[in-house]
Image (cartoon, rainbow, N blue to C red; front, side):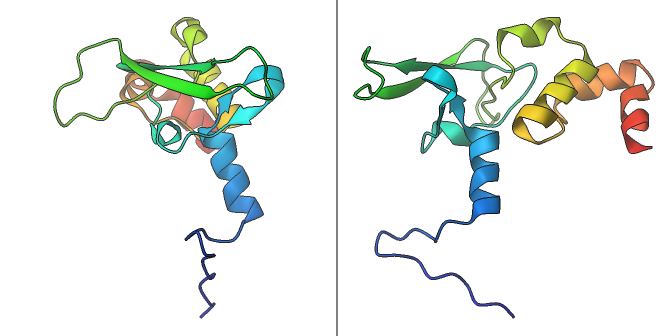
Length: 136
């Protein structure tokens, strides 16, 4: 058995390039000049192609170096108690994209295949054509 990594004085595990870069790739928000920003809580919100909320990212001050990064979560549909709050990682262009385009974008940009209700229903409507083509 391997040893568990020790935590430092702040309670953080040592940097793991593979894991930490994956977290950054999947959970970051794009900032000014192609920088990426991670938020402690908002970066944990999961994706759904037909989401009930939007995440709006802002750099509060005009100077990038001294600016304060903020993100706001805003409901755009009713969210019933107990339901997950999902955001669409693709953004505004998601509505005009077909299943294959959404899947390719999410895989290349965020490193995962979406299995949300919308993707399942879109694939089901074509007799699961997309799913069969990606398994081969």
